[in-house]
Length: 369
Image (cartoon, rainbow, N blue to C red):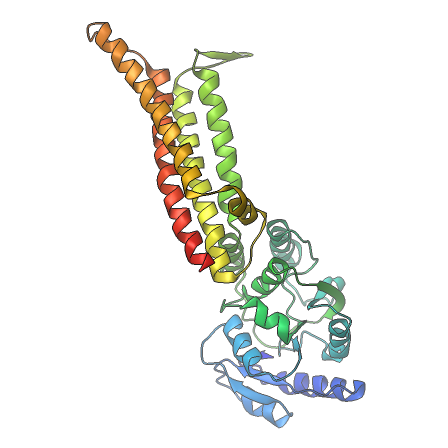
């Protein structure tokens, strides 16, 4: 149990958890991670039978990390010390772990949320949106990714290598469980109004959840927008190369080629960054996915260089042809905007691929070593 100034409830939570374990024959302990309480929370927790450990680094995730590191059990059940969760359910969580699940999430939305327990904004906007985004990013939908009551095995916790220190710790745990293809289950629970002041700050902590998910998942952040920009930019460039394009009552001329060129260049940069980020994730998080499998199977530095140099040569050839035509016309006024834009785009994209291939290879070699 993480704890910051919860003297009104922490003792009751500890006693309830200990009693639930005793009734079900579970051998265990209650660890309270005190996150710098200025009231008597630590004393009340110890008096109720908990083992209190200090968590000097402030933050929800930091408190949990300190408590989990100190815990000695094979099965780890997590829950806030503010009276919102029913610790009589501890045996139910442990049973799911014994049946083979690696992470068991309490689901307030599949269970029951008592009146006044969750603000309207959190219940109907914040939690559903962030939980939905996590499901899209990491390939598995759960009903309540941010519930504070959950359980996991010690082995699963060690594999996850959790790092975040704030409220995003809840998202990180689910995301890393899915990344490592662990077995994730949910059980419905009752969520009660808390006692005392909430430590949650809606927009700050919501952004921290979203920020973490974006940084951990390069596919929606880099790769999908990158490939979409490349496709749109390339199609528009070649469609407008012969001349103005008329669709219905709309006329698209060379001005739109500038936008198309920018999209193709930007998209290439995003894809290079995304693949490098994927490779870095393997090194830092020791997880992989189909994009990394694709890189391992098809990408080599030499192939990347060949493609990049081919595009550079094509762009250079187009610009040389423009130069020859200009010189042949006696250096008269020149209006070769369309081919010049295509040639310039190929030059820049080719250069990006050449240097990007070197960069991805450096990161990949580090990951492999």
